[in-house]
Length: 228
Ligand code: GLN
Image (cartoon, rainbow, N blue to C red; front, side, top):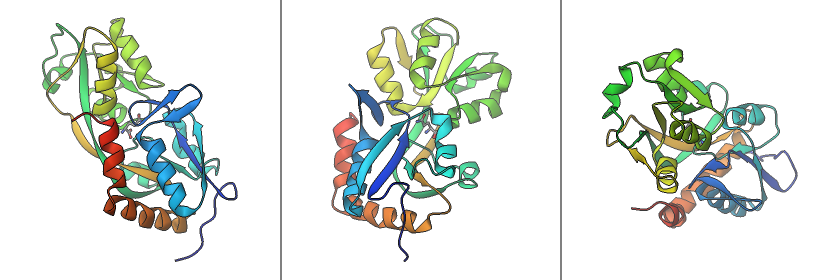
């Protein structure tokens, strides 16, 4: 196992989109949440300082490829398509795509999405991809982040929002008149993405991640933010 390098000496530079609670969100100027804490624990294990850059979700993979950041932790789902552009560490959490509707909506399950509905999604996410594939681009409106998609639902610009479950729960709690349908759309694995040019960093992160799983740190961070 070789030595890894980082974009800035002694620093693990992480990209994320801090509008995805509880995985990443802002408290004042600071990015906090599950991914921020896991990244801090990983950086500590690697003897690095952590720096977090906030950007659009759709820019993360390009930022890794361009050497602007070392990794992303962003509730990012491992997909075959993304694997062509970046490497992924082992998974540290699972996610589920769910459907948010307004109370009284005639959408009762995922099957109803086929009935000429307009679906709000976050640009570049798996929800965006699946809905475009399943229902056609014409039925999908992509917003730069989940919070904006939810605002569009509240303003009746879309009939529903397809997004990951934990942020969905936070958005529904923060806004009156919304609910999450019982149907799950797709189940996924979250992992950190790393440049294909930096396999030594991926290996070091995987070793650190395994230690943090074994000693209960990862589960502790998830439990702190995710309500049972
Ligand atoms: N899990 C979804 C994806 O990877 C959404 C992630 C996000 O919006 N931060 O596409």
